[in-house]
Length: 437
Ligand SMILES: *[C@@H]1O[C@H](CO)[C@@H](O)[C@H](O)[C@H]1NC(C)=O
Image (cartoon, rainbow, N blue to C red):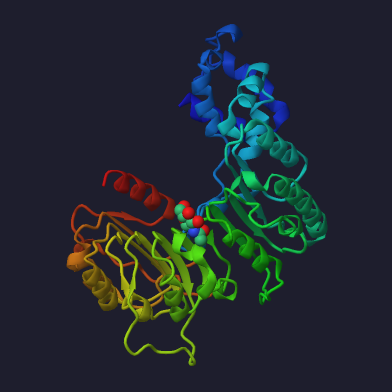
């Protein structure tokens, strides 16, 4: 209780107040009257190991890191104006008192995550401390720069490029590189100048930009993905739109090692051709393009066997029959759908063919009348082990209908099913359920 209070207060106030706060904190209990003297402060009596555990909880986890996930369906409720970056908090903790300075500097795990928005002074300090005090542990880089002021864009790009030079100088240390930027400009140049194989421990990568771009073969994002794809350690990727523009299906042996795939707009048949090369995928997120008139209709569906697929996250097209009728997914236990019809027959066919049983189902932002479809799905044999149902009809797009009353689905589920609306709550429940499976 006291510790939580401490955590939330400490990390939202400027560094200058931190030390005075630490003093006053140690003199008062949360209920008011002074009970302890400075030399008795229980926070100062905590063993170093416990202090380290508390420090590890500093800052908020960057949503940039939680891929594969769908931006709308799995929307992190983050107030970016008051977002408390993990790395900045780590630096500030060391400024509280001499003991905390020593403890933070001697605690390598605290320095393994570097997260930043538009980078400024304190962030460069944090990056240097990460490199210096992380005792050669693998590092995570999480950049989310969506600066809203156009007047700052040039300055921010310059600072980001400077940051990338430092990142590039230690290329072999990064286990995760997650970059979400408004505009790429030349910020990736320092990374692109590195020799083949420089990102020797890279396991997770995400490169997302808000720019509308038609990737060409000399596009920096395409080139950086090529460099990443030459790393045998890579397992988790979040590609931007139209992955097949830079994934060479015939000639990318890495695909067969990937375990988590997230991607922007992709046509159903392109997704299926891609998946045939990714037999080890466990979590798949894709935003499916509406079928265009020139899309090939497959007469007899492909069979794509994904032995390890646990979670399937699909959005976009209202008709995903081609996907459902091709997949054989015996390990599937979670299906997350958004802005699509509930094609219960095709889904039930897929689950039955695979002898899969769902533990969690998400129905988000549905746009059509389909109560009967949902009821039929929920009552099917393959959903009798369902534990978690997230049913959220709110839409994130202003022009779409939001006024539908949500249906009462409880008559169609067994009594053990927990209902959720918010993503984070459902996610936490899923973690609890799967940890006991
Ligand atoms: C796939 O993973 C294995 C085992 O870690 C590794 O030896 C191999 O080089 C990887 N393949 C590619 C193409 O990266």
